Image 1 (cartoon, rainbow, N blue to C red):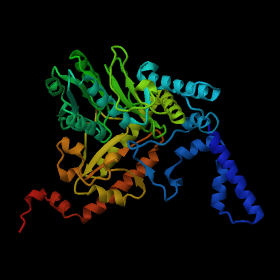
Image 2: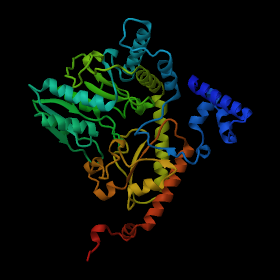
Image 3: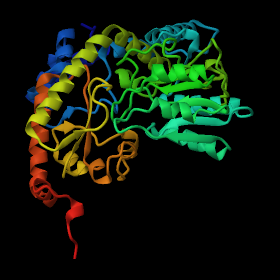
Length: 460
């Protein structure tokens, strides 16, 4: 069991003391519930219980969180590691002339090793960034620009994250040739199609390890071996896979890898980029500045965030198997509960080669946004948080061959290490209640029950 954060303990004690003092002084009337809540957080056990408490004890204004592919909650152990560098050891890690800088630099190097240990790399191959989006930009544009004179062809998938696709489109405007490969109906790339797309001028293949929207796990080891045999560099966006499935940059033949902190219960605003040293991968970083991170990512390293990412990676290394088994168990419980009570639902993406705890489901004759608005007690999403402002159907689902109508009906659920069985049962009830309500209002549902579709309607 993890240590309770000193900050939380002191905050709770201070709040309780202030409430008692104010009540004694007659300055303000403190609600009994607020005073009780202020006093209860006193020990590590109560903080642990607060993280995993039953859904029945949750406030009505706080829905059950089931959007862990968008972001995961901060692990209290990670907060413990970060706090000293936010309050006491606040030195700049690039200041080499005094103790404050030395302590910060030591913490950054420790975090660098913790990230490297999780993926089987050397600490010298890890460069800290502001997140996976920046890592993807540096990787794709950096490798492309360095090799442009001799190799100007890049291969990626149609289902990649938007920052990868936009980086490739940017390079296209700079004169690069980019091939966007389709995927099969289960969301996995056909290795034969990938092999046929490689050319003598191909400098990079970029393929996401675990998909952020449909949770599909690509065969990155086979892709890495193929790229190595063709002398093509292999980049993978591992933001979703890191800490959830085993990654080994050497066994998987990965040359460049992007990582994110807040997907593995670490802080937001921090990520990392792995760049292989042997055989050496050369890239020309698009970021200019003071030359920090050996020129790969200039800018002052955010010590508290980096320490948090390192701590999150260390926890993931210890608990990956337990977390995966827990998430897989609850994923099956959720899917079986929905399938047993709701007909005409489809799981998008391969169910076997899938990220533990991810489900992307289409509910026939139910508009996804209407379903989200009705599920006030559960926090889920209709797809990637990065494209949630768009009203267009998911380009990922369209690439899988899902028609626009069913693409609009999809909902993504993400399970974390803190999700409980009771929460899953409540989520099932919420889905059943709202799907049945919306289907009763839908004329398309009546058509479907009659064995017809919208195409069978004769318009006048």
